[in-house]
Length: 167
Image (cartoon, rainbow, N blue to C red; front, top):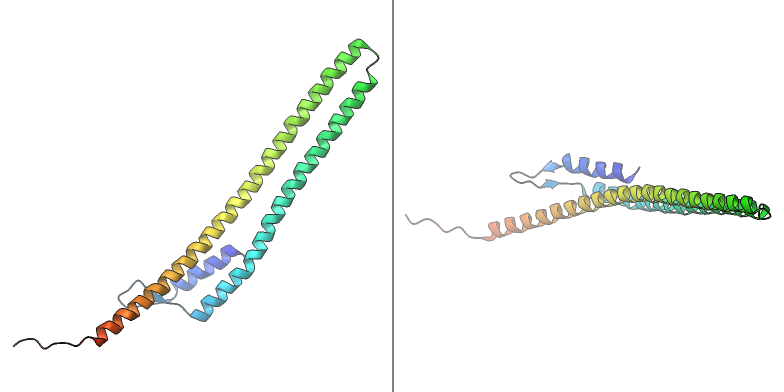
């Protein structure tokens, strides 16, 4: 089960929890919530592994682009060396080599931008999932803290003596 599904499960647990009378608080089964949090904790390393895989893929794509660019450059240089004996041919070869080099650089830059955009998108999605998780945890902790404050107020009310009204 992925992080998003686990967060949906948290929301369902809270939405279906028994409401406290005259309060926005609710009662959540501690064991169920702790089990759900533990499952989420187990899912996080998998999501992190996926993110690392995306980063590794980015590096390999950039490396492939570099290898391809180097192959194009090597091909252009070999062609230029072969044509060195004739002046007009040398000029044409030089222009073609420069064109190929520029094209390789443009293609390499384009591929790098695409990979960076892809990785950025994946990281942004991961950031959203993590923010949702943090919000759900914070919300749960706030509800627990609110419940403790309500119990403390009820204890104070029970301890106060009631004075009879003057009659």
